[in-house]
Image (cartoon, rainbow over all chains, first blue to last red; front, side):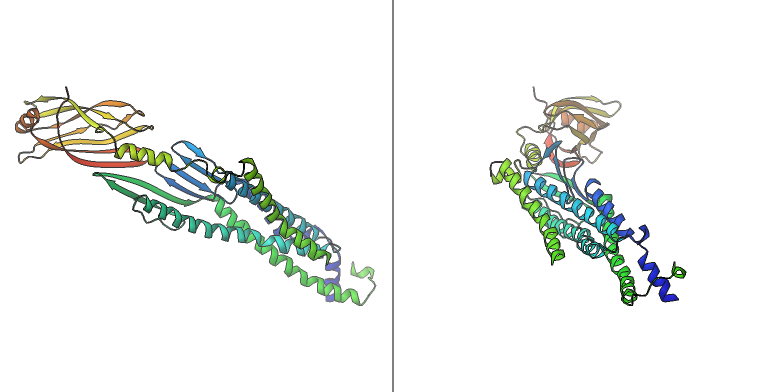
Length: 219
Length: 169
């Protein structure tokens, strides 16, 4: 009787059989590029600022904005890719409702689920390297400073001809970064969720192989 | 087999998009590597501002006059503060002092002033002064210490230098 119930629950595909965490993660991934900058480096009070995310790069110095065509191109490609993977996650999660497309569903969710995690990991590595790069550049310019790794405040100073110039430097992770971390966790969970429910299909297949006719009492 | 092909296409697609984006960016700039990376040096304005401050031809603070009230034991020093940069500059602290055993002279700015870009502002430093210090000051023989702190977009510049308070005619 217990086996019959399990067989029925696997046969009747409803919206609840969709990968709900995957659906949520997919929608979040599509929204992620438009949530703003992930990391900011500010010199003084608007003297110079670099605001970064994998999707956008903003550079401002003394009220002037600087633009890099190649970085903008890379950012645009990353936006398209992440939106694409978000869409794959949504489609894969929805297809999970259908037994016919279950294999494709697994494949799509499998491809897209870990991408946000890789994106966040790659971004963290990039900003750590960038931090060291900024510190090296400042020291080359004669500004003595020990920059914090990723986030924190510090004052760089340079002394010349009896004049001391102090430049407050602030590195911070913004809210959008923490959203990305949460979305990455949800996406990874969606991948686990997809596999976990796959076990039910094995039971279903085993039951199906017996070609046992469904009785009205099973419904 | 078909599924693995779909997987390969999905994995390769972002790479293709990236390559396409890079080619478009390079094409738009006529395959000029300098123009496509960073056409302008972003630290340029910062360096220019610091250079104009550190290597200014004239001192940022120039004496323009003085008044003293010996009965009250106070002095008022008049000066001009110049801003050689292209950005507004705030003088948060400006002090001139002549050390002395009996107290000497200490005149400071009452409140912060903002100097417009490439402009100058007249300021007054007031404070207590002994008769001896005022006499030395008027003779132009006393060497005092001028210290100031200026702020340009959050960048703080502090200096302390030995100066005589000579009024240029």
